Amino acid sequence: MLIKSNRFLLILCVIFLSVIVLVGCSNDSMINVNYIEIGHNKNIIENKSSLIYSKNELYDFVDSNEVDKFEKYNDEFFTKKSIIIFINFETSSGNRSVIKSYKINNNEINIIVETEDYGQILSIAYYYYILEVDKDAVAGVKKINIIKNGENINTIYWWNE
Image (tube, rainbow, N blue to C red; front, side, top):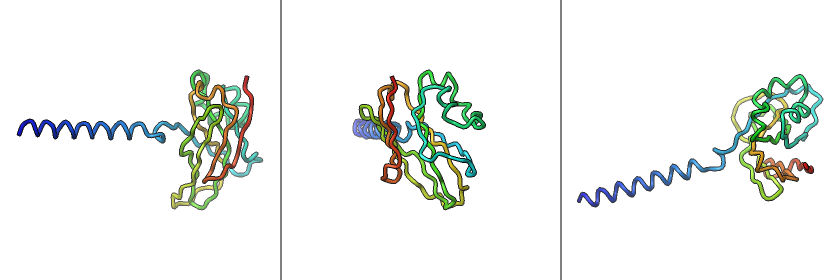
């Protein structure tokens, strides 16, 4: 009887640890994103986007009066990380788009953005969508596709030497 109890406990422990490992390794838990509102009365270039490797590149990308919103992205951050940043427009319909996942395949990244219904009124505004990635993982990237609700809304090409 004691042997059967020990086997049962061992099986439960194995199942429990397997569930923890599988849940802890899901792709969504490893995505670091940030959304920064930039208003609605600005002369915004929609679909403006870039892969940013340094604080100086970031400050060149954003409006000078919005630099204070990006304090997190300092020189220390950019020693090991880069960001992919793009602008998206949100309406007041109670929906909000979020970065759900991304996949790096050779020299190309696909970023999946999905619209979710939150059932509340949100402000009409443009947002910076910021995806934090390991600098080494994107070192050879030449193309980024931003796919929103199954449709490619933006493709970025560049050659960083």
